[in-house]
Image 1 (cartoon, one colour):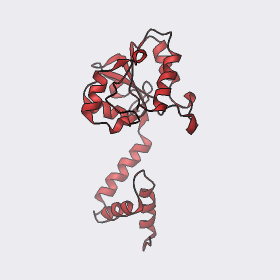
Image 2 (cartoon, helix red, strand yellow):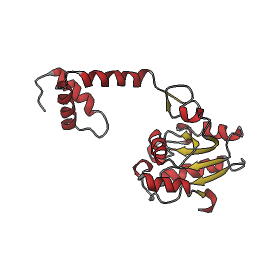
Image 3 (cartoon, rainbow, N blue to C red):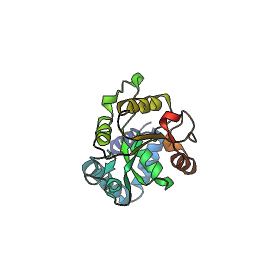
Image 4 (tube, helix red, strand yellow):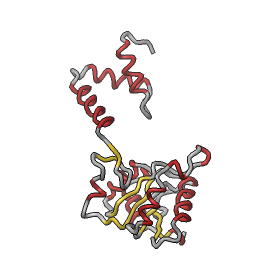
Length: 202
């Protein structure tokens, strides 16, 4: 791809470094921003600057937040005793879109995957165990993508807290094995949360 402008080339290279955006798509985006009289590019630039400088992670659930404690954890209308354990922030958003869950979350930030060199110490398991041992949790809903790595993660957490007085349930298998949670449709995901089953009865 030959460029007549070094500035345009740098913009395309930057955009193309994002997931799912190839160079042709990046070029279309860059040219669109050029032709938009700088309004969108300025707004996008400001939003990205805030994204890098102002956003933080909730100290309780590890989801993205504007404050130390996110809006969900701080809400008095949520049930703090029921914790939905998810792999990523995208999963929180997917479950929230169903309108079927009124508890709080714990974002692991990944799942155990020995092949990829990801162990229990690399994700937010220890803080989850501390939440449970503090007596603040009655039920854990394991809303983790039903893959071998996901099931391994669920099994590991279950073994770590098996002596604690907490119910562990998993989302129903309306979400197909091997599927990614964030790509499940809202109806299927909502029913999977609502019809969750005890972990030990699977």
